[in-house]
Structure formats: C-alpha cells, structure tokens
Length: 124
Image (cartoon, one colour):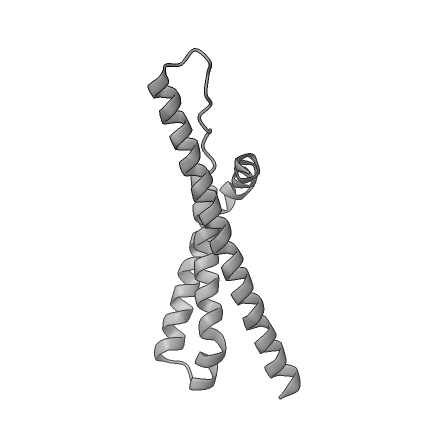
C-alpha cells in the first residue's frame, strides 16, 4: 500500500502548486457564494466548492507526505532502531488509511452533488 502511495506521490509532486491554487480558488468561490451569490447559486454550488477545496488539499498533502523515502529495517540494526522504524512505517500506514477514507468520502459526496446538479439541469 505504501509503495502505491509513494508511486502516486512522485507523479503528483510536480502538481502541488496547482493543488494549492485550486484549494485557494475553491475557498474564494465558497466565500463569494456565501456572501455575494444568489440563494439558488449558493444552494447549488456551496458543497461543490467545499469538496473541491478538501479534495485538492488532500491531494496536496498526499504528494507532500508520501514523496519521502520510507524507512527500511536492516538486519544489523539495534532493537530500539528497529522499533522506531516499525513505528514510523505504522504511522505512514495509518496516515495512508486516513487519507484513503477521506478521499473516498469526498468522492462519494462529489458524486451525490454531481447527481443533484444533473437532475436539476435536465429534469427541472
């Protein structure tokens, strides 16, 4: 699992400024929807802008955290160093699981928002 995250982090690392810019634009759009948009626009697009901000921030975090080399246990290491290495790897596994769950949740919410937008455009 960590090898998968590391491979994708290498691919996503050059896009980190884009993800950060996308997050800033989504937060700005949310602010505009909150204070200046009409009620209909705000109801339709607020959740989309929040999901875009959270998703882009998660991808930015993924690219930054998993781009580093993972520690490896070497047979000649002492017990404390092996324990530390295994704890760091366990932390990375838990972080990968957390990011996966958050990305799945934002994907699910994004699909629900997309379904409601399509339903509103075609069936209203």
